[in-house]
Image 1 (spheres, helix red, strand yellow):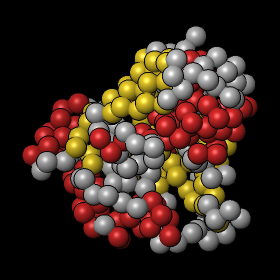
Image 2 (image 1 turned 180 degrees about the vertical axis):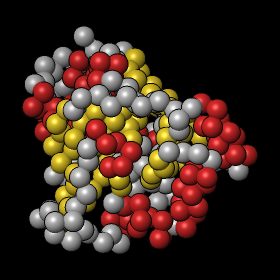
Image 3 (image 1 turned 180 degrees about the horizontal axis):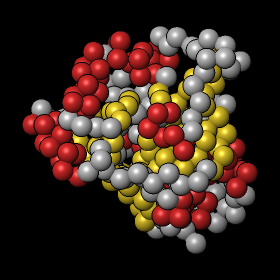
Image 4 (image 1 turned 45 degrees about the horizontal axis):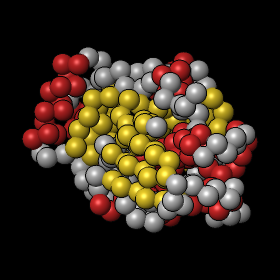
Length: 281
């Protein structure tokens, strides 16, 4: 079975406070985009889980795909194994949810491969055990994420074109970003309104990350100078996105960052229907 594993962007990310489990409570709007990894799942008679990737560091037991496969195998007493081949295109640790997306796709496709017959509620429970935004990737499209991000409420599709992603190659610790964050005062939390998209897109982490990493601030300013109608940090970074009115302005901006050696990609958000087209029948 061949699966596609889509990335995401956050159109909105507000951090409301600390939860008892030491996670942060968030209110976030996530959108799937047309950037994806490919994952091939092959059933094996041996009980071994074999994970291959075009990036060597992702082949080990620390990969969420591997951890979830072993968990499912143990919990549901699966005697078969799987050979899993991950072709990585989504930048790693970039705020685009690549690892979480891979984890969700592993739950969906291993359920099918091993004929586990999992209910949606079971998939949601397992996803929440391994991360905060894995649950979103069980759905895709556009969704509201609450609590620590694992409580997902589907929303109407928000379809945007001419999005430029730029990653300067800076490794940003999400823990450091959240740890240095100044929470909003009571009553001052930002709100998202899809009818007023450009004025209400927001990322609470952006100011903190820009303070810690001035190069990120400079990147956002350059996106604006090239005509982006909105620029914003993706998640905890270091990927930034710029929304452009037309392909010409985006292409000029993209050329500028490619000359600097940065990762760049023109992308778009995708609908729930397009996202779920990749699910096994």
